[in-house]
Length: 98
Image (cartoon, rainbow, N blue to C red; front, side, top):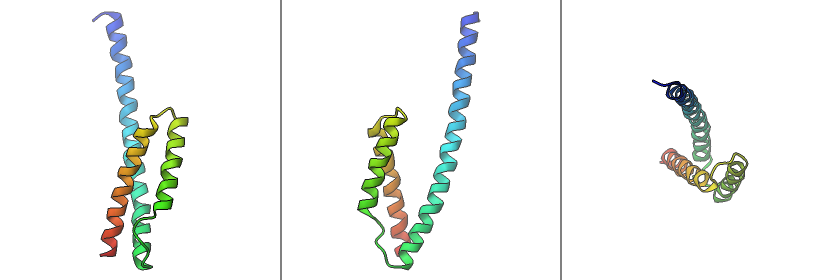
């Protein structure tokens, strides 16, 4: 291999190592988030509260879009990601109410 190819391979490995660490952070963070949303779902079920809170969800989406812009992340992607998470959380909350 040439020096430039070797250097490119080293840089690629560094990027991939960072991506792997960030993936682990994402998974553990989502795990922690879902622990809290499960507790919220149980609390809502216990007190006969609705499984979804549209006002809170809209506020969260707005907040996340702002965070995404500041993080130089596509706000539409962030919105889709949060909408996916919210739909999963609502499904869990509905299960607690059964």
